[in-house]
Length: 460
Image (cartoon, rainbow, N blue to C red; front, top):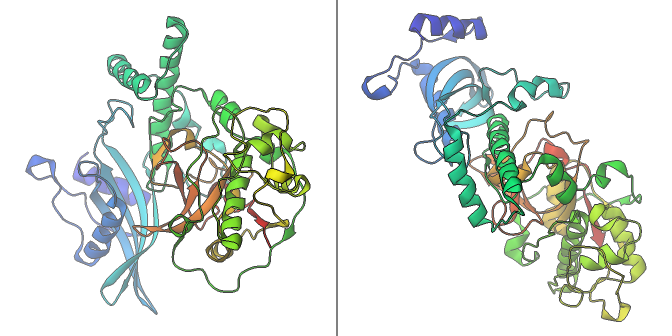
């Protein structure tokens, strides 16, 4: 695009803003630095924050900048509009090949306080989409990006090799050549889907090949998720008393001995049971001083309100534990991944609870409660988790509605990575998923409904 045409395009996007022309390329494809002096420092600070955690060769470069500055009580506030260009993706494990350079449109707010910069807002998206995060948005805004576009013709040879590696890595076997071809087609569509989810994520998460990449969306939802969470009200619990002290800047119960190893629910929608046992394990440790790995299988077999592998609610599970008289340990009542005849013995119970409470939906109060009281059972919308590999997920609200929660997990901590706030979430899909079994989700905006169904057992 000619410099004058790029400038016209920029002025159309941002009328009335002070703008700069496009940066002409030097030899070797690099851009000359023609950012106005007054915008240079905040613009490159914002770029540096955007690129944190990215490997060399994947970092974006600044192309155009416009903006304004105003004086605030704390310093100078820069409101910037910028275009960034990301290099093409050449890794078939995380993107469809070939992928050209991607141009992003970003809004940044940077505070300059006595020469020290602080990023107050970052919002980036592909320039060919009209994507915002307003609560009034509908799925229609995103359908063009999520359609099944056919891959390039030369992709088939490359994807066959990647699929072979997937089969070896995850020890897959299929009944016939026909099923193998079918799974290859599913795998290919899923790679495309993962790339599109990646393009729409506003956090630092990376999406690509996981052990679920040969499953259709329907299969994944039916086998691993829990639609019961959004269909049933469950037992009403009384509201826990809020913690008056502000939360510490960060907290991690894994470092304090209150969290057992990551478990695997297998091909069973029993996430609700794992979420609850994880919470009870933490409560028992904090009140009795012993960390026990407690039995999820007992809940599958003996909780007659919930539906075992077909789903359940944490509130019902707490009530079942109280009525049964406690939980046996994992060693005494081992996990089978399917419902059996109840074999619980009150004499074998090693942990019990006195009550259960519902927690505040305010995330600051949730963080304060977690830091003082222990890990929290929560439910979330699992959008994108089928292909999640690592990083802090921050899906757009219309794609990850808080009203469509379908997976129960355990909050074990919180903190910040490169100024991005997160919840540390223990999942129940084994240590070979995500970050050694953990999921990191953006904290502070009610992302994916993480704050809508928070609860805990009470151990006196």
